[in-house]
Length: 460
Image (cartoon, rainbow, N blue to C red; front, top):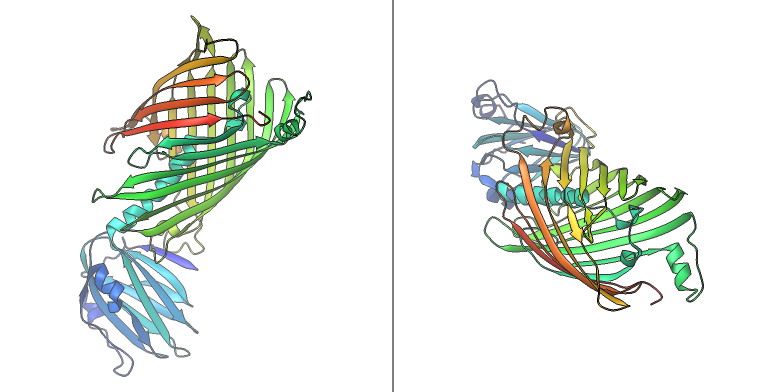
């Protein structure tokens, strides 16, 4: 069982009350004051006491530094902490456990370990700097941003068949965490059956099963301007049912993983799954709504990590997009507006120390698109495409309530533009090249990206 403590309630009487606590000479060992994470990671905060004994340590930590305190005992033990000018507070009292402590300010802190009369106890302490904690949190933010930004193509009822079966795709590497190098795959049971009957007419069934997967590698830049590596992968397993020519219903399950390496976090990864229904409805010529909801769990693996978000979380996703398609002077114009929101709720087994506060990431997208196909001959074509718009990021679904956005003093608004061209053979393979830019908002850098993708239908 893991308990997580934000030490914001350390207040009250004087620090000397703990420093002057009487310790049994045979069992108590009070170490000298040490400074920061380095001393803690060298064992300066570790303690070991026999049954009925006590031990204390004092150390100075910077604001935001995070400690993991692992208690090992065959009986029960207690950990208390106090800061200068504050009362002692019990962080843990019970059997073997793991407790996290985040320094609320730069100050000297005292920690005490008490073992019961039945068994000895040992306390092992590790510490993460603010930079490391920030690196770990950044990974989790990117994971939610990836999930909120894109759904599988197969949840769209108007998905063009020429885009249905990508063999693979590759892209250049932008900076600052944008999704560059990319490999994707997509197949359905009906397409597989059709490919096995080359030259035979095949009518798709009203019920179908499909798979879509994507693997992306990207680069991030840390606070020392050093480049680090990351990757994101997701697999979708879904079914679809055509309730009519204009209504598609389905259910899908997804499994995703994201991992990064950096000098601050070492190696950190997060994996999870979600499952839920989706629908795609054609309301009229060129007007389509796609909607999806999903629920699941996620966990983060951090070797020797101490981030609060390493706790397992319940995860939920909501997403909806409304698109319109119109023909204007030979061009296909596709305006769209989309809303997505991903929320994590930590699963605390013991909430006596901290409430399970939801952590959300959402975006409201507006991205009009224009494209036009020019035939080069009876078989080949070229199709230029351009899109320009933006999206508004938010961290709480309540921002969408009337007046919620107006209350934001500095909205996190991003602008986005893409341009590309596709060259292909009708009802066969095509090659797409795309480039784009996305502004980083108020503080982050702009992101430039490029993509080269080959789509090859099965049976060709």
